[in-house]
Every structure is written in C-alpha cells, then in structure tokens.
Length: 85
Image 1 (cartoon, rainbow, N blue to C red):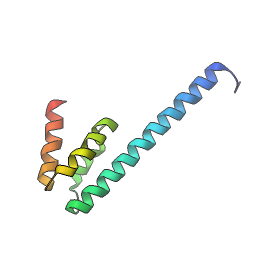
Image 2 (tube, rainbow, N blue to C red):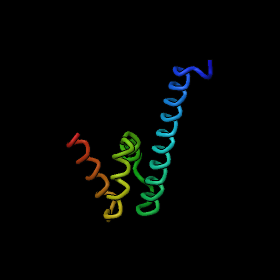
Image 3 (cartoon, rainbow, N blue to C red):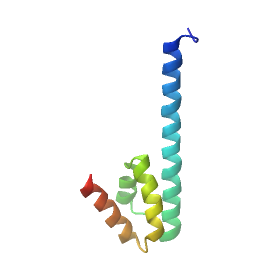
Image 4 (cartoon, rainbow, N blue to C red):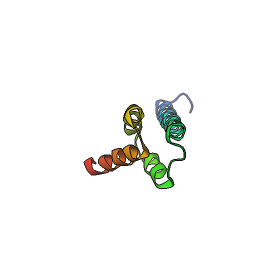
C-alpha cells in the first residue's frame, strides 16, 4: 500500500501542508517578536488580526513594519488590508 501512487500523492500533499503551516507559524512568530521589540506589547485585538493573515500577507507585513514608527502605523496598515480585501 505504501508504494501505491495514490498513497504517495496523499502523503506528499500532507507533507506540503505541514510545511506551509510551519512556515506560516515561523513568520507569524518572528513578526510578533519584532513588533514587541519595537513597540512593546502588541494589543490583543491587533495580534488577533495579524494571526488571521495569509503567509503572503505576513511576508508583506514583515517588510512594511520596517517603516512603522508607531503602533498606529501597524493598526492603519491592517485596516487598509481589511478594506482592500
């Protein structure tokens, strides 16, 4: 059974999904640590919004946060994401 094409396909898809989840969790953790280091504690509501972002949105946020000067910049960034979605 382990050598069947269908089994191998299912296994490969599961591995890819796990890898994508891991990559997303790593990006999320890094972004939250960077924001905390830069601005102190991130508000719970803001953190919850960040946790809902896709991996692509997290990567964009990681770049954008370099230009933030306050937590308000982050809140505005997230609000603009919500409007454009």
